[in-house]
Image 1 (cartoon, rainbow, N blue to C red):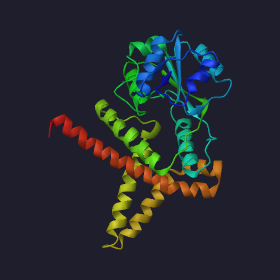
Image 2 (cartoon, helix red, strand yellow; image 1 turned 90 degrees about the horizontal axis):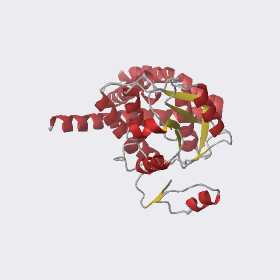
Image 3 (cartoon, rainbow, N blue to C red; image 1 turned 90 degrees about the vertical axis):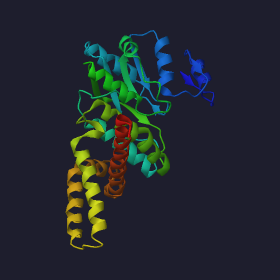
Image 4 (cartoon, rainbow, N blue to C red; image 1 turned 180 degrees about the vertical axis):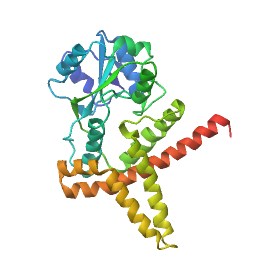
Length: 291
């Protein structure tokens, strides 16, 4: 499926014998994938993002997983622990994503479009991805919420992994996390009326968000009340302990220096995630009550 591509990559796919559907655009991954699904012939659809590399035996492993669990409705995989780009932010962000999936529940709480398979008949029955998402956003999470609400079975298979080629910079990271993830995901959460204790929404992450905001308040307050510095230190230690397994993972993978460097970025992530949730909550209430 070529969504308004401009690099001629569809010609390469055709040269390898692939059937390529093209749409003028771009119109976004949701609409493009829906069109591909409508024209597919197999019993299962397998989605991968354009910026991942798959191991040579990935399809065989996905097929074997489906055959071993005939009641499975959908499955998702994970990024691997060897991100392609070597700059710090790319290593940090992609390793964080790997860790989140590798430590999440096997019975998945949602779907993942970067590496996920689903029964074609079920995908079409559910109406596919919500095409109102015109950019790569939470269209896969939204579909997963609908699937789980209807009682369908999604499994996270942690041994099915793909390599992410994404190069993250400061602006691209903040833009994606805030505008394409946090804000629309907040809207989904509030529409559902409940939090899931899984993936990025684990209880420890939500507590960390609150602790980071309290830390900022105590640090600012210490300008006027110096004794608050002691509470700030306690909060710092608390956040470190709460996320110690993640920081240990970073140390094991890239060394102590790398792990230490991730801490301010991880705390910044908690800060802007909480801020985005607050903004999203306010917008949701305004829309709900017509304030």
